[in-house]
Length: 155
Image 1 (cartoon, rainbow, N blue to C red):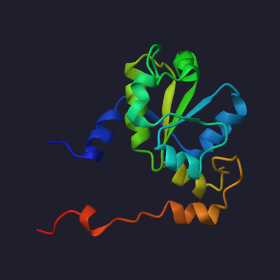
Image 2 (image 1 turned 180 degrees about the vertical axis):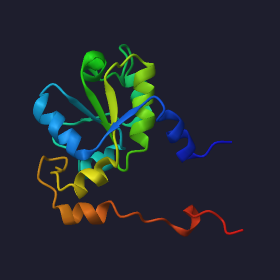
Image 3 (image 1 turned 30 degrees about the horizontal axis):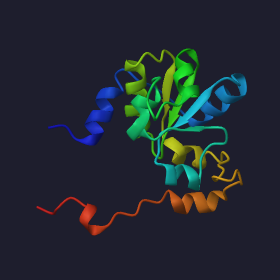
Image 4 (image 1 turned 45 degrees about the vertical axis):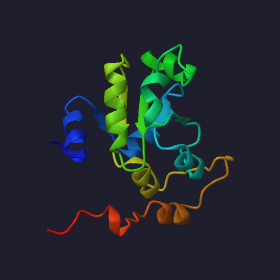
């Protein structure tokens, strides 16, 4: 049986990653670049990269195709565009980028370190209304908070 991080590691054999400073540079150099945020809607509403497209990972594959209730036209048309997939820490985005590659997206990579790294690089985030998010608030938001029942049992 594989564990989550092993699955991510396996996908990294096929998926490229870029760092936050690379994404900043790519966004300036390529106005057609599509940033796809695969976090849950409540996460996206709290903070995201301005101009990014919210496509939760749970519906990603059907959002990439025509004729589904989840179809996201901009995403379907993006098969030949440069696409950067983002999430909170850079793990879900690897899995999502891998799925997109299997679906025929030819120029897709994952943001290594995710939005946590983007924030650590002091890059701007906005909320659902487009208002700037204070990076100190973002720092608090990205701090992991595990409940006791989420921790592995002690042997």
